[in-house]
Amino acid sequence: MLQDRFLYFPEKARIEDLVSGGLRAWPTPGAFRGLVAGPVAEACGTAIVFHGNAGHAGHRSFYAGVLTRLGLRVILAEYPGYGPRDGAPDEETLVADAQQTIALAHRSYGAPLVLVGESLGAGVAASTGSRERDKVTGLLLITPWDRLEHVAAHHYPWLPVKWLLRDRYDSVTSLASFDRPVLVVVAESDSIVPTRFGEALYNALAGPRQLIVVKAAEHNDWFGRVDETWWREVISFLLTPPY
Image 1 (cartoon, helix red, strand yellow):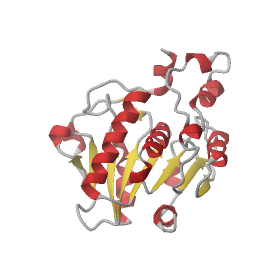
Image 2 (tube, helix red, strand yellow):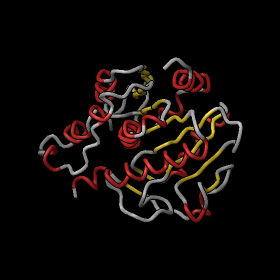
Image 3 (cartoon, one colour):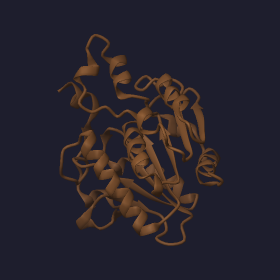
Image 4 (spheres, one colour):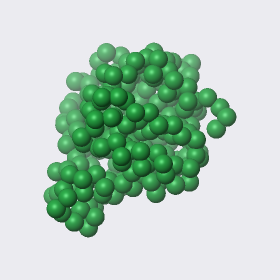
């Protein structure tokens, strides 16, 4: 009960309520795994966005807006139990489902393929990126943690959270041998996932890495504090060889 109240806040929605503003059901309405935007062909790459723990993929259209302008095809991945999808979220389910999404995107579009993970989605992206590294060009982890138990202990210091959590989302262990570029973004004033947890993850990375601190930003307002030039530099780091 503690874990589910702390971690998962899905919002349901119908597919027809989500497909607007250039967003299309992906891969099809009948086999819905998320939303896609941008060119079907001639994109410079594909970005799969794994969103945070609340709402649904349709709430993350701002990623599609900026990344498609940079020439990327953008898939806003949806989790089981969120939006129009059936199921119940937990770590095993979300990670296995994300692996299927990555495999389908890679078969459909090829490389380069970048994973973008936001908060909880950073844990999903870290775990799946390590398992599917042959298909992944790089990771963009936004307001991530090193290990979920550290964030839980920060918010519930009076509870033995290490023993109560069923889902671990241990990104340090997941990325211990990951050799593709990883860009970690932390919000300077983050009260939900304090910056020290993202910095701990960054310090544990062995491969190509970069850390960006978004000044004066909170957990949920960082997007409004960066511009298109910022995004261009981020994507350039993730897509530019040699890595």
